[in-house]
Length: 169
Image (tube, rainbow, N blue to C red; front, top):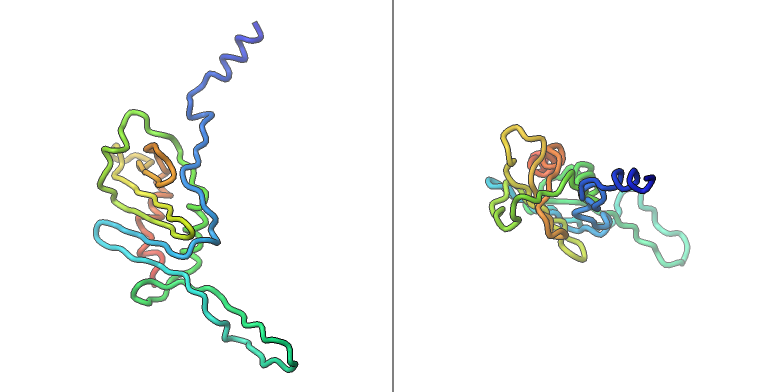
């Protein structure tokens, strides 16, 4: 009798128990971010440059420690809003979907409205597709780290869809 109550509690949807992480990477490893939309695309590259502000000449004979910092720029050399780009990388470094889509084949989704790739030691790609229903609160998506079609909330999809406008000054 007690066993039946327990069984009823654990017999839920598979999604309840399924790991919803669909993309995962170490944010500090990312050296390049590429955003592609139907009408535009851009690539953002992280470069290490020498620190120039506040450098003091060494007064002793010890080897000089050159300090460096990282800067992000796009292919045209335009100024990039690093805080927005860093937030985008952080937000997608541990992407969880809201649900998996079981009634549609991943292979049927071939024309993304937006695509973002994060490149470090490996390349991690997320493709976002048109909403399945008008006014839906989620977008279907595919990740290079997952074999299944899944849904991401509209606010996360909008981060990719609007990335080019948000990141470049």
